[in-house]
Image (tube, rainbow, N blue to C red):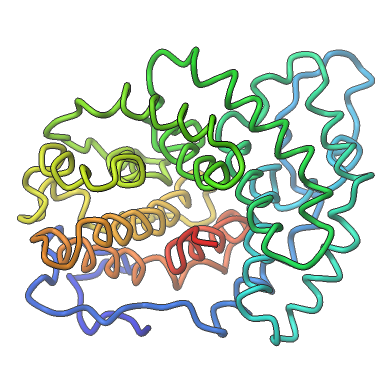
Length: 360
């Protein structure tokens, strides 16, 4: 798919300065292409094994814990932090499956053969057994590991079998955590519970029916009664839309009942309200790791808007508005997936989500 034929006025950094969308036009859809695959995979391969800089999620229980990241995480010690390394692996495995004849796919498979092995997975599991590790990467990293395992299962390779003990460990953590999470985590950063449950439910759908039932029950408990969302977003360092990730999750959980729920949750969406949900975020400094999150917001919103439009159906009045919003957000963010390491170490995964979703 190509970029939009026209868009709202632009600031110097390319972000839209208007909440008015081009619903008077039919947007040209942006699709995943082999060129995207090569660009994303090449960038991600360059940092999956890049050990520094690295941001540890680590409680020091003693001086013996002050060790290099690779010693704590035999697989996921690159890409600036653990969760970015995990979803970097998800991304390159998926691209190798979608485009198996690209030259980069052979390198991906060779790297996976060397890294996604039982001995190294055992090292990752050992980290989870450390004292004070219960909150490690909760819930974002947990969910991405399940997504990685689900993708690995689509390959004729031993990677999924190697990763399975780690996936089951994180699934068990979801089983233990969700019943005691009294209130939903609605923030637009790593703690957002709706985003995590979207990924976890996707993994559980064919593997853990009890986890599906638990996720659905919790989503209904937290979100079924939500009405007239004001969408106080974006926050200055957010990469997830609190409103749209919730709506995306409920689209999956509610099925045919979703359009009625959505009509109460965002009753003025067909009129582009709340306006902030339809305007791509402005990114003022892509070398600032937190501000660079906003490129991810644009990509994750595109993913959510596309999923919402599909669930509502083409005849629904919000569907074309949602599709146009998705293309606007994609057009604003895709040029910036690579270029500065503070975004480059993770944005390609969100670009792949936006362009191709989670479907196996």
